[in-house]
Length: 427
Ligand SMILES: *[C@@H]1O[C@H](CO)[C@@H](O)[C@H](O)[C@H]1NC(C)=O
Ligand SMILES: *[C@@H]1O[C@H](CO)[C@@H](O)[C@H](O)[C@H]1NC(C)=O
Image (cartoon, rainbow, N blue to C red; front, side, top):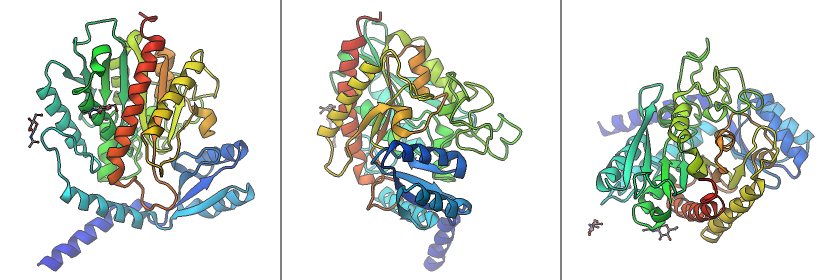
């Protein structure tokens, strides 16, 4: 009986991740900007998916389909780009990852006495339970904002935290979001850590906060149940082929140079921009939640996985905005604070313009759109991820708490700097 159960479990476990049979992953390390640009062009040329974006002298992690494998390696060699195998068998590695997470889940302490469990990646249900719990515990501070429903009908829940119910219009607002991409599993944990900390800190005296732990709940869910590397939404109404290839990349769906660069018109591509700007309920929900408050929002941070970098507009062409100096300077303050709270094994953060640091131009991003609307400081903050010498496709869950704490420490400093620079002048 027992043996049967084990066998059955094994069969079920192995039926997962079938789509990654024969795929491989590589660390790639460009040594200059030319090589960086070449790697960027491989997204389109070979359908390479960078799980962690490369930067000059900084490893990226490239996910490679079997049918382009040979050409990809040949191109790396032709251009003299350094590379190293990460997973020889992506599916097998994903099966191992699942076991690690499942084992931890069985041993997890769960939510105890109102403390968010930071010892494992959080399921969507756990995230929503925690938000509901905090809203109940702190009714005077915490309000759940039902920002809309997803394509598959899940609620999109944000959190507003304020000692004055957002009525003191002199208070600057800070916005933090996670879960833009389904697969960015660590990011909701950081947002919820921020929520927990805010209910107990003095950061509410001077600021109001909008937290969005999971921008893309359908994609988040799907990356747990079906496809570990899923990034898009799950809409099927965008294109004739959307039934076959659902979903839109929300971070290409915003109304700023929409669908002009670094995007695709094919719904099967990861960078599919949708049928029009703001076509997705998930992207318009965020827009709707922020738009009336734009004049008070001084800092917007979108958490992504991974790459230890703080990236700012403009993402579509690498040019600098009027606030470039403040963006760079506050970005460096955030990075320095994270560094001084970090572990020696984590790489130092890179701060800079998104297109220049990653070598990839892309239009319709959330940070560009929010910056265009008037938020002076908007960042993609990519947290530490997989490093050479580690296996698997996520940071070991034992580091979630560390990443949450150090990132939050950085955000606190960023909030103070942002309010000094932009708090009073913009009202
Ligand atoms: C749970 O939290 C409450 C309030 O913060 C505290 O008074 C109590 O001692 C805690 N209980 C445990 C078992 O940690
Ligand atoms: C909240 O975060 C701040 C900044 O990182 C930290 O100094 C403080 O200890 C945290 N408070 C709690 C209760 O965790």
